[in-house]
Amino acid sequence: MIDTPSFEPTDALVALMIAVSASDETIRTAELVTITNIVNNLPVFADYDPDHIPAVSRTVFGLLEQEDGLDALFDLIRDVLPDRLWETAYALACDVAAADGRITSAEARMLEEIRDELRIDRLHGAAIERGARARYQVL
View (tube, rainbow, N blue to C red):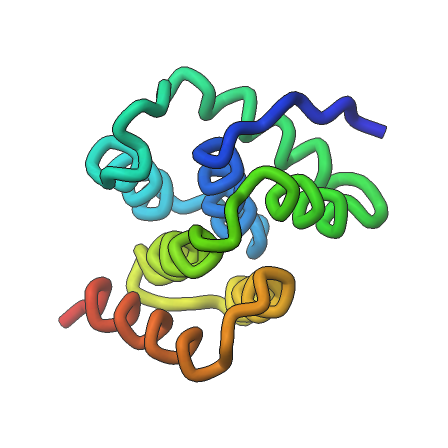
């Protein structure tokens, strides 16, 4: 079992984005660039130290390698992330999934799991997903 470090809410947001990116077992450059841009530009990350990202990544990968690791990751995220940021977390996850212009079936399953775990209303979830698709549409 991996020893999970103390997470801040912003670490939880980063962890969720990394988990979505890793869900199809291929972390694409577009997804990494999107995570970097999100961390560098969104107000929720104004005081975040990007040097935390490698440690958060190791934690996510370590958990995902374990049986029931995804459940442990969601428990960790729910424990530190205020309810008012659950829709934000889902929106960021959708942005990462859509970053390369397509959402794989594995990413879609992960988004469904996130939506369920963070109790995102179906209608709100659909609106968030549609916004991500619109932002990352390719010609």
